[in-house]
Length: 235
Ligand SMILES: NC(=O)c1ccc[n+]([C@@H]2O[C@H](COP(=O)([O-])OP(=O)(O)OC[C@H]3O[C@@H](n4cnc5c(N)ncnc54)[C@H](OP(=O)(O)O)[C@@H]3O)[C@@H](O)[C@H]2O)c1
Image 1 (cartoon, rainbow, N blue to C red):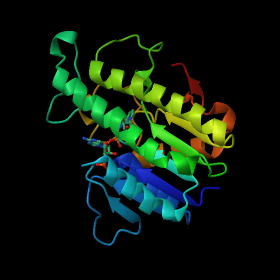
Image 2: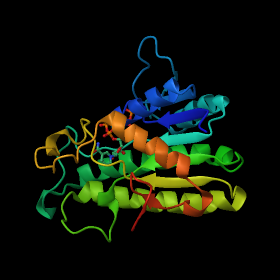
Image 3: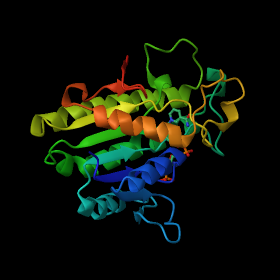
Image 4: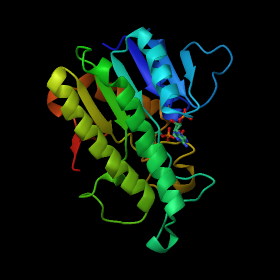
């Protein structure tokens, strides 16, 4: 059973719903976020403006004082003021591609590196990195969304590689990427009009599903990309 959770990218709406459910169940909750702590937060909140690798290491060290048995990494950007996802390669800009690679791959990689020593020793630790089904290369039948798809595919490889390295030192660990399903957050908001009925989940529903996935994790699936129902998705 989950007793202490660290949630990185903790201002995400899915992250906040995970935090609320864990807190409600009596677990300790640590958050790392680019956003400053809200007033009267019930969580141990580390503000990390992501200005340097040292700041990332420092905030992880603070959060590890609560000895988390579970880590969620929620960072992910699909669109922002730099642009919407590309419909065609003609819309691809190197600047936007680099920004997506930075927020969706470089930032999670920095946190995984900072966590490496801890994860290599903590028995039965569970790590869930939020990815996306659109990052599956073999599942891609629609095209488009170049920068986001490429960055999530790279994230899946990062986590696969990392899981192999950790498993040599800590065979009881399980580290996966997870597709949370289409969830009503600012990230999906511009793309919700064409969804099939029932496809859009609330952040609370998604958090519940992800916590169920967490409870079912076993070292044998470490490195996999999982669907929100816990099944393995193809890379
Ligand atoms: N919503 C969906 O339908 C859906 C579908 C598939 C996958 N996902 C994935 O689920 C995760 C959470 O998404 P959400 O829907 O909850 O999104 P959201 O509410 O828009 O949250 C955005 C997340 O990205 C981080 N972030 C924002 N700008 C960043 C930057 N420049 N550099 C690094 N991190 C940055 C935020 O962390 P801070 O707390 O540090 O600001 C926060 O964790 C993402 O990885 C997303 O790709 C979502």
